[in-house]
Image (cartoon, rainbow, N blue to C red; front, top):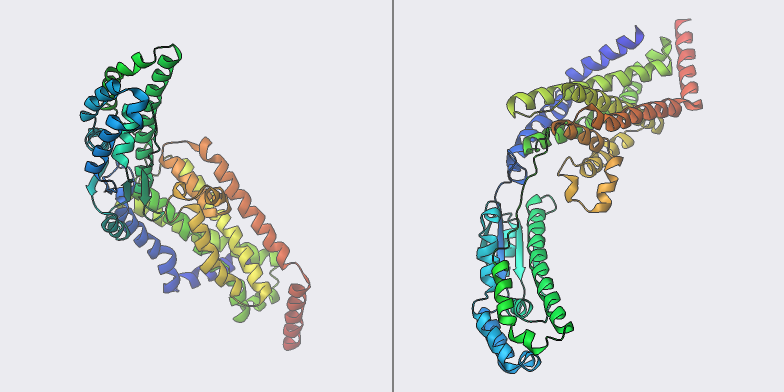
Length: 461
């Protein structure tokens, strides 16, 4: 009954604190709505990506590159190595070979890519300005001598290095990552065709065909060019049976939920020291409430606050944002486990704060630790776009573990796939609760309690 009294008192204090209610209930709902709509284009909606805007920078001079290639075939090293007859035929084939057409019309303007990417041609300075202003997601830079080197690669037995550079914006922009993947797929397709052509030429040379092979190279190159012009980079969203894509509303509903329940732990971290300052802690000691009883009361209060947050945000997002949370049992158990973990952390922070005798620990937890866990756990943006080292640290954040469990459910997985995350959350809550009891076990606590019991007894006498 004494524990129930502690719970009623703390909950009554919470509901009378408008500032605390705004932080733990209203703020996450507002951010959930804002982020869901503001970052909608970064996520799949009904299995398709939104349009990604890019700028293409051409650092080469097309006319100069064409003249240089023609000169190399007529009187340069290529002519001497291949023979003028073969070089002349390749020059004829080169007139029909346009790397610009392949890149822009056959690739970027193809239906598969144009459904995802829209591009404009800009100078590097203008493109960087657009990128910094967030008007585009990436810059694709075609380097100096691009046409010349591509013609060498496509039309001769030789190969020059060509590096297409992709400059992306902030780490939070998934569009930049998508562009990098698509450009890499294009480069791989072209490289495969070039390697196949070189293998064919080497085989001809090895079998003694020699100059005869070079004289037939025009026909070979035309065949390869016909194949290159049909190169397509297909971007498909693989729809697995029973699985569904995650929308921006889905992701940020779960992300804000898992981040803001950490503030319940921060609120709980102040409870013991606040009660000591208000002398309610001393009265509980005099009333015979044990340290375990006090911590149990605080644990339950933080657990109920987190559970309230989870319930409000889940219901709100389901009806207003149309978020599909998935299997009800998985969602319920994930919420309970997350609230349990937060309660354990909350009482541990409360114990350390009480032992320190000031609110510095609780302040650090709220201002630094929560923000760090939010970043590592994916509450600000998906951890998949972070460096690999940071991705491995996501398991150090409670919100990251809870977010993974919620996303599994949202994608259509059942309890079996989320059970591991639920188990980790439960274990974390238990470990921190035990740690809180251990921290409060010590001479300082007992002496303080005994002191107040003696003073009360003297006052009553």
